[in-house]
Length: 376
Ligand SMILES: *Cc1c(COP(=O)(O)O)cnc(C)c1O
Image 1 (cartoon, rainbow, N blue to C red):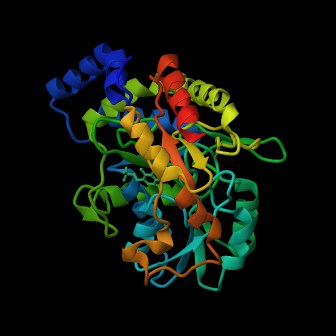
Image 2 (cartoon, helix red, strand yellow):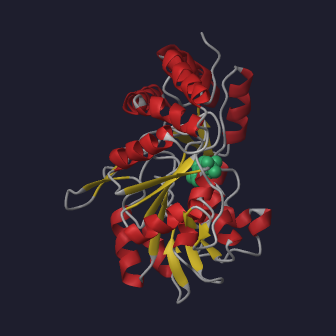
């Protein structure tokens, strides 16, 4: 059996080698390294996939969030609602811009921001909310959009983990993750569902004014060369990385399906562990693209199980061990948006298993059998 990895990028490369090699060598031979055909093609591919009118590549997913918030023109001290249980990037960019991050508790079942608790956290300084579509499934966007409309809040969707996920509104309308708010942000970090061989990111929007501004922000605030209309930065996707992404793009649907069947196999094989652990809940309103397959381990035995699995050669990860409001850098920066009990509880019980499109049935069987053996 092949060595089990959380994400097996080497196996994926083996599968795509001839396509990737020729795309990469073409770029090197072309002499065009910054911007270029592959970047333009990638922007078009992302727009087509998501259904967004504009897609603007940038350097990474954290920059994508930063650019999105700058584009909204918020004022220092304005409050931005974020989930408390998440990767730190959303909190970080909010604080970096001297805005106030307001962490709100999450929903126990889905790990996503609890839509029902957003209104309580709104004050007269609240300007925006950042729903993070965590682990591969969409936040409950229908009520989030309603609250945002009621209080006049911008919505920036952090879609670093859920590219290709689809949300169905009560009226039957279907939208892809990242296109339901004002701006959606993406990361193409190597381990994401669509990843390059370095850093990469993008923002998408339907709003022409935001699109124009976002584009300028990525190239020193210029609309024409050496004419700087606004203060911007340098945040570009490399042509080389775009070439890699365009190859992987053609496999994204298959890779997503492979993740979904791996998740199904895990859940079936772990069915006998009820009472010891909970397998991921898939909500009706959203598809799940399984960026992570995350268990909740009951009875405080998470850390013990993690160690025991490691001894059997099975890696696992705790995403995320410390909620935003408990992070040292944020202790005095955040303003808690209500009680954060679920977030606290999840940080103690979550355990993510190996998840990638190249997991084999043999590996899944082995992992599930070891978990069943160790946890009872
Ligand atoms: C990975 C990730 C980011 C940041 O993306 P980078 O490309 O690493 O900067 C932001 N938010 C979430 C939820 C992520 O998982």
